[in-house]
Length: 159
Image (cartoon, rainbow, N blue to C red; front, top):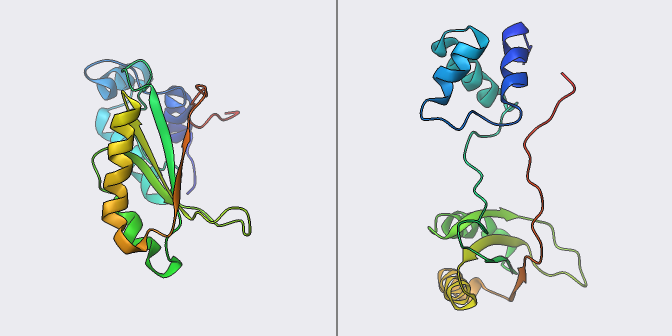
């Protein structure tokens, strides 16, 4: 994608996040003195070209009371990983799910699914539900619990 001045202005204005207001694109429009439809069209183009992966909220799970955050890791047959990952990723309590390479002989897991709960028991129920979805394709699993909060930030440029 070739960036123009408008793209660079939009990226600079949004790299720390969209304004936390009821109508963020209207506020961005006023800030940049650009029509909302131009901003939306350029953001769509950046998404379509892969420059922007997605636009979405990043909640602080701890502040919402979800203090048990576990990355469940699963050993599933490689031939079924795409289909199984799609099924697991659609579960309402899985915030993200992805395929990662194994590192044999020590690390057998190739499917990762992040879950969040207010209690350890809640997370255990979620893990059991994932195991049920995987059925006989679950060749082993574990859960890696968060021990500290890492600062999450989006793309930062030197623009």
